[in-house]
Length: 308
Ligand SMILES: [Fe+2]
Image 1 (cartoon, rainbow, N blue to C red):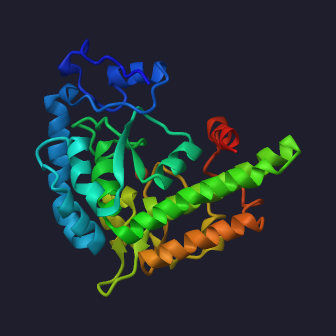
Image 2 (cartoon, rainbow, N blue to C red):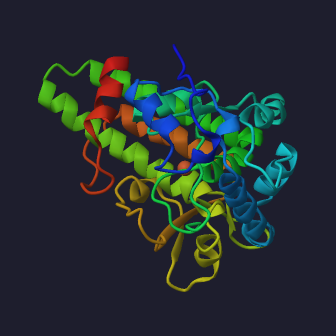
């Protein structure tokens, strides 16, 4: 695949979320998997990273689970500069064979899960503006590298992610056998919704039981200065032991702190839940999950249909 020629960009334009011309061009050229044009990061971009990273230190120590704390240490991230993905991978790959793979933006559902199966994590390379550190509807490199990737250093967590990637292949196989097109789309929509909800309430917003109370392992929480504390301390949050039947039928909204969270006992527990999710998928128990968020778009559906 031809990669975008980034030599024509002025470094001052930077790689800021929603403002990066490099990303716009890559997307308009249909380039999903890209290189990380490190020289394009601006002074402001590095400043965002420094601020985000430094203010999270204390909060991670207080609220993050031990596997994350160990993981972020093993990655040797520079607190002052946006990380180079190649360098991150030099530390990550020997541990679990996972690696961060730079992408230009949204990865359709099947492709995303398939990357996990191959131990590749689609990673956003842009970073939020330094004057808007708190609210960001889309992922950025801080969320992906400081929130997700430290978890990928843990072998048990990495195995659960790979197992989740297997489920996407199972889903593609299942719908292949459905002759009626409308029924195929209806069931696939329901299965993708169930998978997205499971991913949300575990990988993105999961909590874990520990000897020291509930700790955070979900990346949406690990990368949020406000919510990592709120999710543990606030009386406004309901926290329950995870139940598969609940999670797959539970809607969520992405634009505010989560009012409902679920905790697992361990990553072995998480792995078993993914196994169970797959067996429910095979027996048809994901074919009629409760309607509601998240929406499943045409691109997500097509990504499964093309794969099957
Ligand atoms: Fe995420």
